[in-house]
Amino acid sequence: MNMRQMMMALAVPVSLAASAGLADRVDAAEPLLVQPDGSYPTVPLAKDKVVVKVLQTTVDSLSDFPTVADGLEHNLAHMEAIAKKACTTGKKPDFLLYHEFPLTGYSAGSRTDKLKYTVKVPGPETERLGKIARDCDTYLIFGTYATDDDWPGHILSINAVIGRDGKLVKAFWKSRNIKRIYPDREITTTTIEAVRDKYRALYGPEEEFPVLQTEYGNIAVSTVQMDPFIFAAFAMRGTEIMIRTATLFAEDDVLAMARINNFYSTMTNIAFPSTDQYRAGESIIVDPKGNILAKDPSLDQDGIIEAEIPIAEFRKGRKIPNYALDMVQPVFRQYVQEFPLNHMDLPREQLPETGPEMKAMMEGVSRWTE
Image (tube, one colour):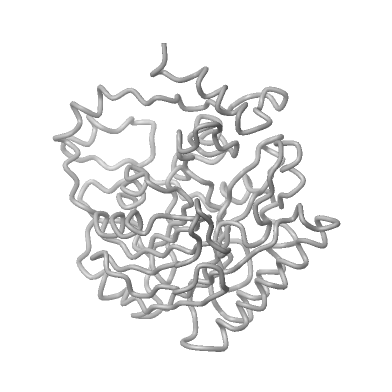
């Protein structure tokens, strides 16, 4: 089963409910994505409290090994070792949470080079990691570079969710990449925003901001940073625990998003020695008030932090956040997004090979330049 088949199998059709004013804002052809009364869909909870464990790790890039197989074996063994420790010390975990690239690491080079350092989701690696989830009776979530036969030549940033039975439950695509953070390049991975129309056609509108309803709470997984609208959309869809993965992050971003959107949040960061430019590690777990429940003290070492979330108490009487959407609509309607949707829906031979080429392409489609 490929990613498309898995998503379609998991999709649940929802009929559009009638509500005063709703018809003005919702296309009749669209499924109901947000409940008009502020409620959100859930499944019954299996327990009142759940334990999340954040697994901060170092990682070696696949490009540093003689073969990709050697690198994957090394990194998988590393992931297995820290998971075993997490499952045998402290409280029993309900969620094991890795960072953005524990399996592949980050490899520099062109698109053609980087395509060699990806995996398939699902694939042999998710099957092997599934044994950890099954043996520990926990959800296991990790980020990875991936490729998919439906998207030839595209490098995907995927967060895979493996269930307690060891099987892949969902693959969360990255919603969008941060723009103009580097002066000389742009990120070359493909996101939902970059191929939105084709993505929706393949997987359905519900999968644009998917929320996984589990017996331990409603979760969503994202590698997006500094993007409040993305997290507001996930909150509107009923997210209770926002699981975030990163290769570097800003702590204030995680705290602010949790507090503004009234959800618990985790951020698992990669670990490596700090430099003049980058500061890694210091993964965190935060509550809906923006309080840090746990923080890894290390920048460059493996570590495990944990927190208990009173999910039943949190859910009791909860509604989605109260946003001033009607008030800001006149401004929002006039805002022109600089880069259009679908800017990466291109034939393989036209996909930018490098970060500088990606920047040149983005400048070419920018709506804010002459």
